[in-house]
Image 1 (cartoon, one colour):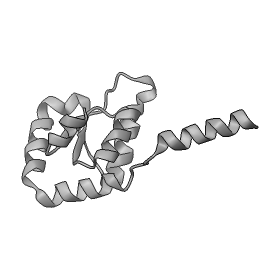
Image 2: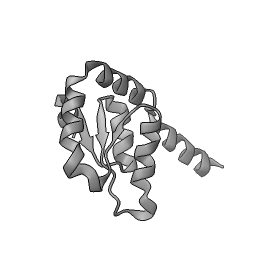
Image 3: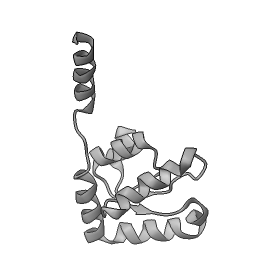
Image 4: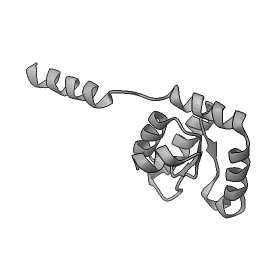
Length: 111
């Protein structure tokens, strides 16, 4: 996916936690279409969290056929909005989490 993300001008994606984490690191403008078919509708919560911070556009799954292409075309044409979304999603990136998790695990082992 890293090559696909790198080549993209915008990204359209579901909103699982792992994907959200990757998208924050990539820093590209994103349109999220959360799956409604997941436990406790957590993808919608994830997507709205980014949207509330100006870091993503959200299109509901049941409105995707009607709105997704329109939103994507408008975003591609709007350089200021793309820049704003990119800047805002990058602010949410958590870097080196693998190292931080490994350190915490090692602390638990040593204790």
